[in-house]
Amino acid sequence: MSIKINSIVACCEGGGIGYKNTLPWRLKREMSHFRKVTMGSPPEGKQNAILMGRKTWESLPKALPKRYNFVLSRAGKEKSAGVHGIYSSLDEFVNDMNSEEWRDKIHEIFCIGGAQIYKVLFDSSFCGLVYCTKVLSKYDCDVFMPDMKDFRNLIEPCDVPQGVQEEADGTKWKVEVLTKS
Image (cartoon, rainbow, N blue to C red; front, top):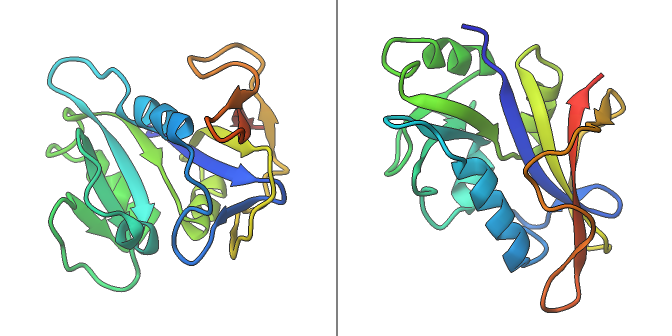
């Protein structure tokens, strides 16, 4: 089976995606969009999966519910509560997703970061769509998106918020769905 792994990310002006191992912003409506996309609407008996790096996993307060949580890490394979698998490479992860254990359980897979994992995925043949929220403000960041020069906006409409969205605090953002050229 040929696996495509979609990505979902929010970045501010300048491409920043993180600061001190956390998000530099709190955007309630945008987080609702993230939840809706990553949970999706899988058919009966399946769930979506999320793939993340170790630092992203450690930044979460707990496993994200109603999704299989997988981690890519060179640091080791010690599983913690809520992690369904830890892998040392993208190829190892994809091979396991094609196994009898997982292929009939997972509907879609979403990479949720961080920057190193996005780069590995973007440079691979497994790269699917990128759901990119552009936060229309500048924030202090110490982690940035990898180069996306090989991506273009998908023109056909997707099931994402259309146009500029606004949070209660006035922060504005918009979603672009990108595909590899």
